[in-house]
Length: 199
Image (tube, rainbow, N blue to C red):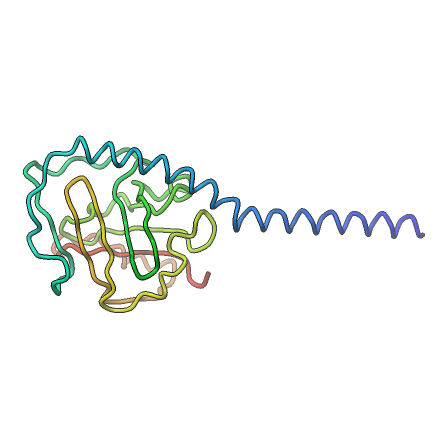
């Protein structure tokens, strides 16, 4: 009986260690992967900005009360990049976020960083542009989204210019409530940031 108990003990210890290693990988190892992807995306985005046509001055100054500060371009809106490629840079000073947003919300896309819902307008365009991000794992770009308050700034940079948004609502909705992603082109330029709740 003792050899069986000893073997069982060793097996349970091994399983426990493997579970701990898997948890460590999920919490920290995935962040290393995302960090490498973000580095590549930053280079790609910098290249895209160099190739972009020049923009004019902002239509409203940053810091003025508005849903969004828009910047117009001298050329028509370019098509969105391929899925998984860099689309924009998002900065949220209050929570220390500074990441490149990719086009797409597939599993592989969100492993690289925040992802833009393809069926919504591009940031800065009329309507509700939506961006998703992990709250845990893969760098957890939206890990502290719940700490934002009304009036906090969300800054976006695209090949079309700079856009300043201000938080005006924070909602917890059921995952099946997709009405918060309604692109509604009749609305002014707005963004919706989505993540898991609770962590």
